[in-house]
Image (cartoon, rainbow, N blue to C red; front, side, top):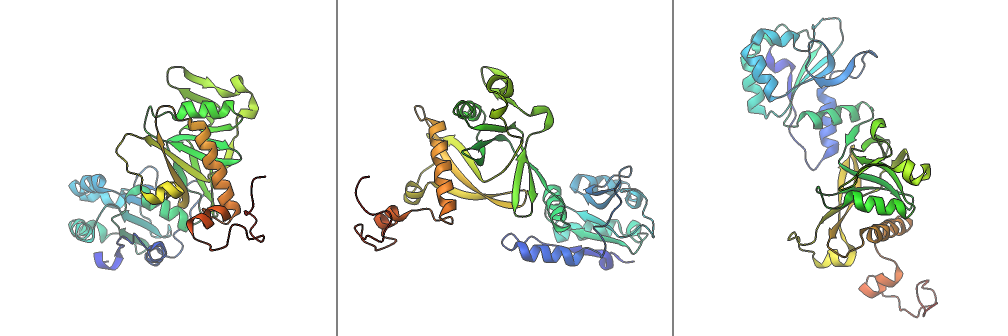
Length: 328
């Protein structure tokens, strides 16, 4: 077998996820996702813990290049009747992959026909998420922050150390909202949704700077805790004096964006932090605003604000306009 016969290079498709998935599906051999219950689907190449899809990053490639004879057993014995196996060279452009494969040609010639070699510029984490997503396995995505249920909405509060995440979480809990996870929430994709939960050992604990680790269940009761929630919103806290300029659009509709968590797009709202601002009140307002927008089908403005901005030319005194009229 030649190197060209078993090697496929998959470039990045940063703006076309469907095209990238199609390229991977085409490169993967038939039956690649089937594996025994005791066998891992994907992970770094390991002779003691073989995987169906073995990842070989730059450092491991350097080690194998120094001892070429180790490659055939780097992910356990390659038996011809063991079914399809995949080896992925990560963080490698096409030239780097071709050069490494040329150096390892003698070892690769001994591979069974069932082994497929793929190279990609993506790193181990990105490839792992993609492979699991392609075969329908849940994807775990760990994020740093405080995950809370605020007015029924799952909200991840993020920010740099000392910005006030734990303090605002404690204030929100005292106002009747619920803690799901502090410091290391784990998010998992289920169909089109993302759910978040706390590691078992950390459930119900909140670290507050200057106080220490607090047992929220003992202090506030079990109603102050929730085990799992859909992630609907991320709020990023940042210093108001950090030089970030808020443009006209952000002044009207807030500083917003989106971010992928466990392969799903989640709305992000960036909130400046300054002395004297009540973050708990502001977070409650953001959640109320987000809930209203979800009821309106993601429209950021209601009737009165749309009229004010000129989006809808309806007159304020139009009786058909539900937002028209004077004070109630």
